[in-house]
Structures are given as structure tokens and as C-alpha cells.
Image (spheres, rainbow, N blue to C red):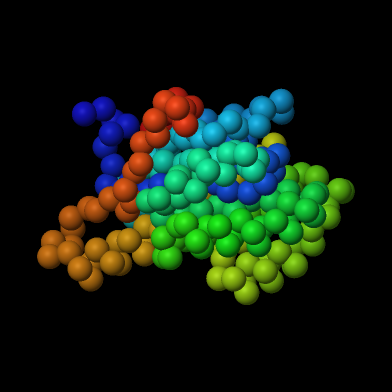
Length: 211
């Protein structure tokens, strides 16, 4: 077994939001510490993995990035299956992407597990001089809808690590608590999500491997 296959929990986390808000760069920044200024719109679905440590447990995150364009919506509805976490991303410099958060949240509620952990992410915080979405407005929306909230910049790495660490830790706390309540052996690690491996037709793995 390779080191990459050694983990205590496996969590599927999805990135959703309008096209162009920076989902792919958040994924590549977290999994490969990479940023591509000329990244093209995602076609269909892709995913990458990275493992982190929480309470001396190894959490392997499989993070899925979906195309924000409407014509790929048929693919994305299936990709919510098995997800235990979601980052709902908008661009702080484009108010329309924030307005569409409501629609994305409804889609998430319709297709994902009712207990999914959701974080609202205002990306491109480096564009503060072009800010179109007040932070307090987004914070209030998150509070009203039971979401956590953070602003990030995939460009300069601000809060990217913190965002993923926070949501994965929250998922771990929920899953491990449930395991303690229901498992005969409280030390038995349980996978947090069913991982739906995409077919070659609708997804590609970015090939990222980490620790």
C-alpha cells in the first residue's frame, strides 16, 4: 500500500458556483500550491486529492471541481452524490456571482445529503479595490442559511489552506462523533463518504498527489 493510500477517513468535498469565480484555482492552490492566471473553464468534472492531519488522524480529501456553465449541469447533479462537504464560491468583485449563490444553494439542498457541511467562500479577495459584495452582507447571508463563511484569494493564497482545513475538520468532528455514538468499536475508522469515481467520459483526475 502506498503512503497516499494510508488514511483514516476519506471525505468527498465539492466546489460549486458560477463559472469564472476561481473554483479550479482554489483546488489547484490547495492540492498543488499552484495558480494558473490563464486557466480555462472546467469542462465537465475534475478532481484532486490531498491528505491532512486532524487529531492525529489522516483525513484524505477528494475535492471535486465542476463546470459552472449551464450546459454541464446534467453532469454536476450526479456529482453531488456522496459529498459530505461543499464550498459554495462567488467572486467578491462580481455581484451577480453572489446573487446566484441562492440558486446554487438550492441545487445543493436538492441534490446533496441533507447533513452536508457547506462553506460560503468569497474568492478573489485580492481584488478588494473592485469589491462589489460587502463582507458583512455575505456573512449575514451565511449566518441566516446555516453556512460557515470565509474570504479567500487563490492568487495570493490568502485563507485557502484555512478554508479547506476548517471544512474538513468540521466534517471530521461530525463523522467521528457519529462513529462514537454508533460503532461498537469507537476506534474503528469509518469512511466519511462514498466515493463515486468518475468515468473517463465525464471527469478527469488532475493527477495531484500529496503527502
